[in-house]
Length: 294
Image (cartoon, rainbow, N blue to C red):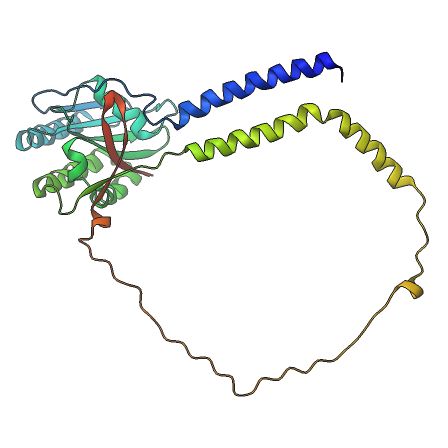
């Protein structure tokens, strides 16, 4: 390898490392895609967009009636239903949250809303929350809503699943924020620590790849020599040695006793059971939500 080739490879390595570092910083910055915080509308609305065409005209009418009743009873929280055949390769909240912001569905400065998303592309269904709805629909309540929807979703009764979800959402909104409710920030998939490790591994794999080519050739020559070189004869009788011994190990009157200790019970009212998992979202807001596959 000439000196010019080594310089060219070194420049390529530096450019690749800079590009990789930029990607790492972008992926580990939880606020990289956040714009200025948008403010919601003054009154709640019901919004339905059936892009996957899952609902009949009768289904739409029934859902409209339920949705209008919900926002009439709870004018500070909007309600939306979305269906899609193409999620554009994004996770549920990264698909649903931007639509909520673009359509200005949320209410007030905290952008309060609940939306139901049915994704036929990945066969997922999801309940998304923003604003006040995050604190009301804690993780355990979201699980309960999803449980109610699951059978209908599997059977292809999508309108029924949405109706069951609206009923449970309405029930929990009437109950309000549970005691000791608190928000827990979702752990990012890519942390700075993981990013540094990935960068370190990248460097370690790049250098041997480009600068170890000549060494690999030398190693191959040595390997060929070792393979065909004559080897000294091995005298089995002289070199081999076997030693035998008998060990008696006897244990008398050895008893083991054990006592069952039941696991500690956790109260259903403990703070850990009343958490709402949140993440940075579109429009400078935070959002919560959970989903299932069907």
